[in-house]
Amino acid sequence: MVLPVMTVEQRAKALAKAAEARTARRALLAEVSSGAVSVAEVFERSGQDLVDRTRVVQVLRAVPGYGPARVTALMAICGVAEKQRVGALNEQQRERLLRALIG
Image 1 (cartoon, one colour):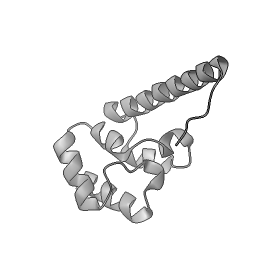
Image 2 (image 1 turned 120 degrees about the vertical axis):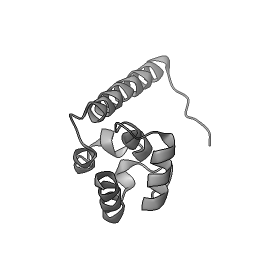
Image 3 (image 1 turned 180 degrees about the horizontal axis):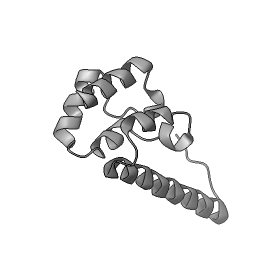
Image 4 (image 1 turned 30 degrees about the vertical axis):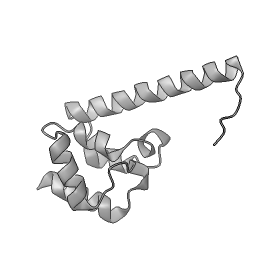
């Protein structure tokens, strides 16, 4: 795939937009980590561009007590792909993840 040629201004604008998205995503994950926002609340925000583009693994790793091994096992049990994003989860996957987190 050939990348489009961008002007300096377009490139700067794209970089600023990407940095803004990373900052917002970092804030969301910090809220999950602190307990201010639950995983269920993140899933309810589906439809927001930021949430839809966030990987499920990032959200689960932000939950206190869930490291890489535990998250990988949880996602395998629930049938969620490693690189799947929150916006691509179907209702059954969301329910399985939430049940597994609670129980």
